[in-house]
Image (cartoon, rainbow, N blue to C red):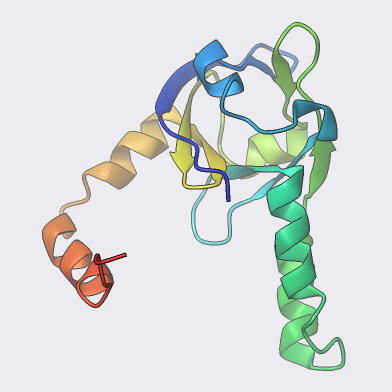
Length: 152
């Protein structure tokens, strides 16, 4: 599994292109394989999946029963707006208009690592998610991480 590190502030031009920061680009695996850009499941942001990571997810999704109505609905929603994308020779990523709209992306964005993928946020929305009034990160960290063994 590839781990991507960092948070990067960028700008989107009027055509929906964003210059991927060099330090982020160096971390992205097999750029020639391309990427998948999609809507996030839980947030108003986009997800940039390296092709190898996307293919791992597709193997898991392909094991689901297509004759289960909930699975069918899930797959339709999960795949909504999915685009194959590349980073061009100038180091730019083109974000389609429908995805810009979904993410409420205007000009300033944040590209944030999420272990093996990159989230793409409108800067104001990203900052708002980090400081909600009812959010206690310490309590969440304890709940999520307290049962994990760190001996390995």
